[in-house]
Image (tube, rainbow, N blue to C red; front, side, top):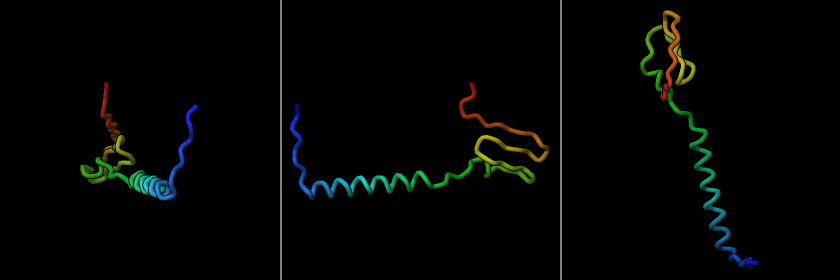
Length: 69
């Protein structure tokens, strides 16, 4: 059976600070909203609710599938 080694207080605090910083940065990028790529090419009377569906002015629905098979 392996022996549990002792860890110094300073090493523990540095490791805990690194983990907390990584979690904080990850949470920031997770909550950051991404722009909708279809909004740049919308015409008058068109709407989009998410990056995959666009409703045209003549009530046509366009579905954007990145990997259509």
